[in-house]
Structure formats: structure tokens, C-alpha cells
Length: 371
Image 1 (tube, rainbow, N blue to C red):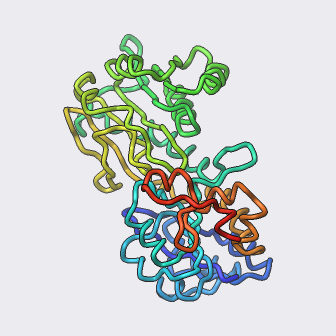
Image 2: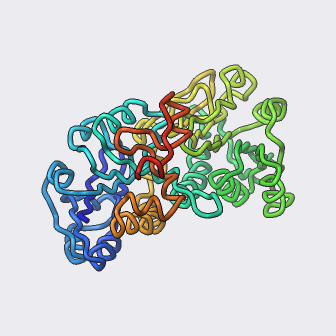
Image 3: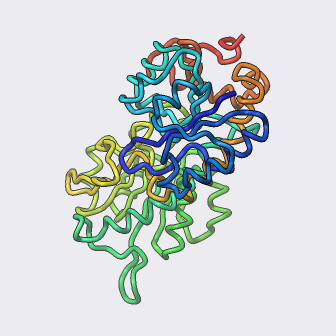
């Protein structure tokens, strides 16, 4: 198979779909790899490193797309890249189609076979290709939230860890999945007061076990959300519905309950956000203020730390990419039901139940589609 990767075009997105190590792994199995000039520079990987690993360097993304059977990216294609896509081509990347109906329509009309990192599952039902970015986004959420609590940015002027004689800042984390857990780890590490809300009782028990008295865990109800928001200096929204739209648990009316200058970091923004007042922002213009509340809603948070993010992501995605290259997409989906869950669009059909529900599309089972 011919595998290709290009430079990401999203605002301040420096990650890249393949590392030189990935290239070497594909080449060792007899596959060919095409890399657009400068694709890995932002993450610290030179064209020379890709060449040494066995890749062919091409000058334009159009040439990579035109020749590659499978395109491996990090983020969804930008509109200027839609014209490069072609029927039968495999697109292997983060897609977040529930929040991007235009892209879903393009992929279906063009007959692109799209595999989304964020909906691939392992035998335990976990999301192995989403996990590393959730871990990074969780840690970054505290780092960014602490920054935008500074008065200069419209924040309350709170130091989350406090100092002797001054109350520590209060962090509220809504959602106790991977991102929420890593946010809690970072929050505990800076000595903030931490409250974590989660709707799954088993997950709550697990979080209580690992954090003990350092985190207050609450069952996620409207009443508990309202109480927690009223006390919060920093709110982390980390709710996830795999492939589907995120529920809006923080509504506009809730903003009036919050302290002026409090900060919301909406990690869930790729899937629409869990705050009603959220909208996607970018790294060079990351915040806006509404009802006196600072909102940070960057859609590609891990892009701020591209080396760490690229290596962590490629460690998770190479396994499934290699399966597709070695076996062909159809046989790989049949062999691994978890990879089948990652198939969002196939031959003009929507093959992920949550995406279909979110976009009001007809759902076709992945195994039935690839027969």
C-alpha cells in the first residue's frame, strides 16, 4: 500500500501524522510512504530523517494525496484540501464528524473511506487512539486555565496553588474519563482544591480509590453542577460521547452563578463542547469572555506540544494503520471489531452509530458495509 502524510493546515497545528519511526515500520513491511516537504518540521522531524527512514519526499500536498492509497493525518482535512480527496481513498485521522456535518457530506459524496482515531475501540471498550491526546489535553487544561486566571487576561487573579495564609483556588472538573482524570492529576499536583463530577458510579468509585481525600468526587446532577460552578475559579469540561455530540451540561444560565473572572476550559469542544456558550477558538486567539467568564475553547489543544503529542499519538495509531496497510481496510475491519468502530464513512455510507445519530444520517453496520 502507498501511505502518505502532509503538513497540517489547522491554525498553529504542528503535529504530524507519521514519525520517521512509523515510516521505517511501514517500509519494513513492504509499503511505500510519501511525505510532503516540511510535514514534520513543527514537531521536530526533518525531511532528512524521513528520507533516512525510507520515505519519498514530495513538494506539494496535491501530489501526496494523488498517489497515496491511505492518508494519515492528525486533524480533519481543511476545506482547501477537500479537492484532493478521491473515491476509495482511505483517510485515517481524527475526524469529529458529529461537529462537522460539512466534512461528513464531502466524505460521503466523494466516496472516501474514513477511519476516525477517536472512535476506534480496544477489546475492553476503551479508546486507545484518543487516550494519549486526552491525557495531554487533561494536563494542558490546568496549565492553560491557570494562565488565563491571571488578571491580564480577564481572570480573577487567582493563584490556584495559593500561598500560606491565602485560600487555594477551586477547580471543578466535569467528566471523569481519561481527560478528566489527567486534569485532576495535574490539579492535585499544584495543590488546588479539586472537585470532580461524574455520572458513572463505577468510575466515581475508581476515582475515589486513586485520589482519596485529595479530590472531592460528586455524582453529576443538575444540583451538584450548579453548586460546584458557583464555587469554581476554574472549570474543566471533559465530557465525552464517542463519535457523538457532547451534552451541554453547562448552560448559559449557569454562567450567572459563577464568579466574575472564573475560567472555563472546554476540552470537549471538538465534539461540540459541553458548555452552551462555547465556540471553537484557535491557539493565537484562544479565549473570549461571555457573562464575565473567560472561555478557552481551542479545538486542537495538544498541538501546542507537538513533539510529545506526535510521538504519543503515533505510538497508538501505528498498530491499526499497519493492519489496514497489511490486510486492506475491508479485511482489517472484519478482523478487528474495534477498528470497525473507527470506520465512520465507507463507500458513501455512515458506518458509526453515534455519528449517524448526531447528523441524522442512515446508519449502516461497518461489517455489513465492507462485505
